[in-house]
Image (tube, rainbow, N blue to C red; front, side):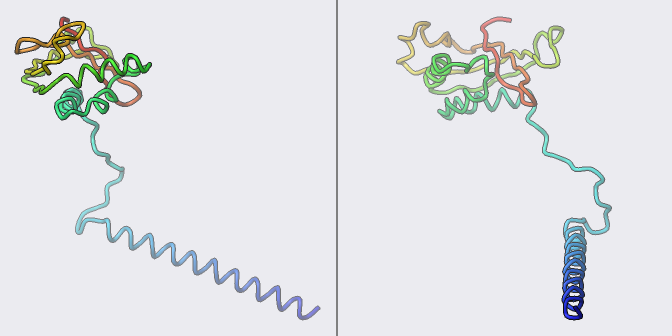
Length: 172
């Protein structure tokens, strides 16, 4: 009976030692983290800051930059689900974007702000494009991009927390 109590006391002492060690180690680890991340002579920020999401104009710029770089699939991924909800529609967009030899944005300006909603905005975008000669045989020759400048009204739509390209139109 006496040996049993000794073993129980030893187990309690060992467990207490482990808990004490873990508590001290975690506490010193947290202190070292604060010291490392704390700017010298300045208080730590009270809230976490994040990198800002791209602006609406940046979304349009990135979209056309991907097309210009020949990354049609990536450009299509910047479009709303409405535009890429089936493979046929998605492939039609990819085909059109692959027909661009080059595309440069000359100007972006807000358009029809009176019709904007919290999730839907339109921009007037002036483009300078060069199309592949093969696109002359498309259903709409050169997919409607012939003489420069080409003006398009780009409607972007918020899906969850991201702005995506919803519509590319030749008129408002």
